[in-house]
Image (cartoon, rainbow, N blue to C red; front, top):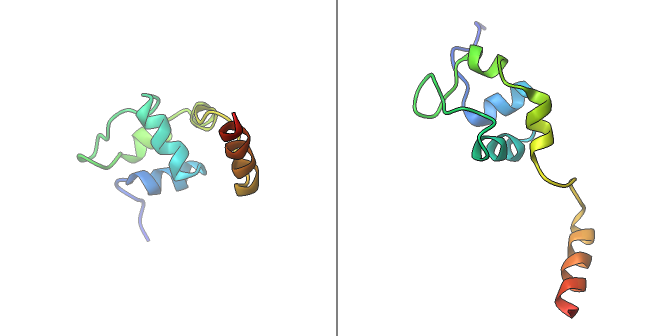
Length: 79
């Protein structure tokens, strides 16, 4: 198997070892530039140049369980 010539968002996220949601959020806020290999793919050089620590830190808050999320929603709806 040869070296990959381009990465879609999910493949780039996997390469950087971050969840796809974090990758997409980082792109949304401008940490990740527009794709350079095609309209939806990045070159290997572009993926390697990304600051993975900044991308990981981009998603606000920490992941929470469904139960914790439900409790927070219930607390706020009680007003």
